[in-house]
Length: 275
Length: 291
Image (cartoon, rainbow over all chains, first blue to last red; front, side, top):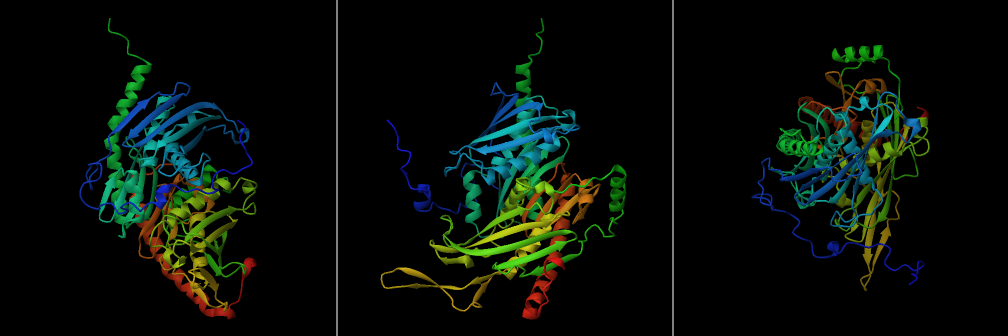
């Protein structure tokens, strides 16, 4: 049946019904255990599930799942740079692209990369770049893409972890893995690895002085911070404590990521049989 | 960003100088360059300011328009930021060249203002859920000589201080219809409380130390910098690591402390200066762009 392309079938602007329905309890309880049973004020990260090498076409790929946060990352390259004018004779180029699937958040997003996505891409780039030995790949570019399938909070932190794992899986030379962790400060207490509800609830609910989020990208064996971003309002001491907590969270994540990488390497090159 | 070529020998010179707390232009590690601020420079805006910091020049214009509040926060107005990197500043910004930097800067500005303290957005509400003031903050980079973030944030604070929003009254008739009435008196204006608008401090890690307000040459010597936005009370509203390198956790903590100290010290003289300029009124000698 031929469709009428001239007629506008829906309203030009539409809104998610969740905005019209009675407001859900905006303020999450700021004390006691969290909704998913984890503890407040403790470095209690969600258990993560990680796998390498899902996408056969890509040089390296990784999938990470923490609670409801699900994202995957692919690495292509190193290959010749597309933009000839930006070819660097000494150093390789890293490009990052982070996107949210339109259905990943409670409100539908668009397929076109918004300014928020671009901001995430940039932060991902700045977090990963110090870890990659780009001088080993002159005149070439390495492409990292991250797709957020479901936004269950702390997306950037997990995207950093996932992308570095994909880079390692692709066999790109790196100084260290990059691990991400985020903390949400809510008044006097904080929650590590916040869920989507905790992330968005805190920003419009609590009226306290200290309310904000910190995300840290950390190189565990070099003890370096490659990415740091925070928003909201925090006293200096709170921020410092938040960064420390994030680093602790990264160390908790480290063995899991190492195991996943080891498993992928074993699978790719099985050790010679003993016979 | 405008780029400069710095040779290895120059780098060593700058690095050694910073190690001894003496920079190429004679400043200490936590000193700003000479700063000039002028408000009310563009008459078509509701508030404007021009800031020059060394050779960096930034012009900010604020326009207030009536819009619809965001459905999530029906009783608040909002701010929109747009940073334009004009080709005047450097030929690299021609065409779409400056777009990337522009989005980076404006996204950071959204984060800086993404809290309850920095600006009372409820004052921008006209009638809840229906009308509110939308402040379009347009930033124009006229000249780039390093430290854009700091210059932009100071210019925004000055422009917000200068912003005069016309007063409106809401009258409703018997049938419940509402009408917005603009005040006849052009001097009947609403001013914004800018006391706690944060200022951004960029700290560049050069060698083992960090410097405030780095020039392009100094920036070329540094691997990474940290931007911190600080309110007059010393509350940090946004931090972000920029640049290609990584930083030691301990140096990050030091930089946060230094940023807080420098940022807090920036606010009082700035407010004093703005009030002084305001009190001059019409007698003020306008300097303009050639000053």
